[in-house]
Length: 145
Image (tube, rainbow, N blue to C red; front, side, top):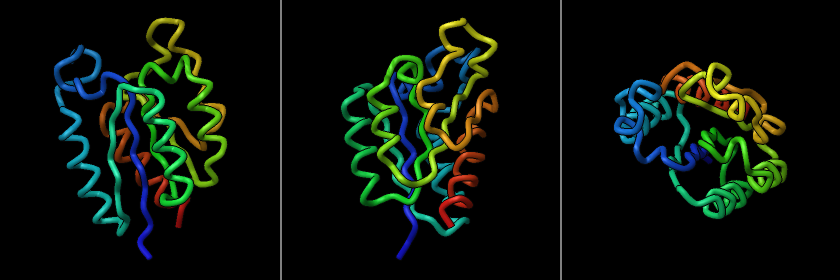
């Protein structure tokens, strides 16, 4: 049976490459997905890569992952700083969770310094650009092995 890892992306990440490229870079979410798919193949894991601007959809995906994924990589976007509901859903997931942020949130506005998701995450990667997804995918695959 193949190990499946979910990569979940929150609000506005569909605009990656076009929204504030001075902060988030010029790579698109499709570019990130392609890089993650290539690494997943190398690691021998299956990948589900998803994005939603809707908190409830992300929660539903986390619930789904309880039955079908060995680990989660999550970039919750702005929900990082606001969503107790996503935190609660992640607490109901038994596998490893790695939180990813493209920018270094600790160098940004003070409201971005707090993460509800970090209360559940097994690791946090911030400020490594889109390469953070690859680092997180490697870590989740190792923890899920």
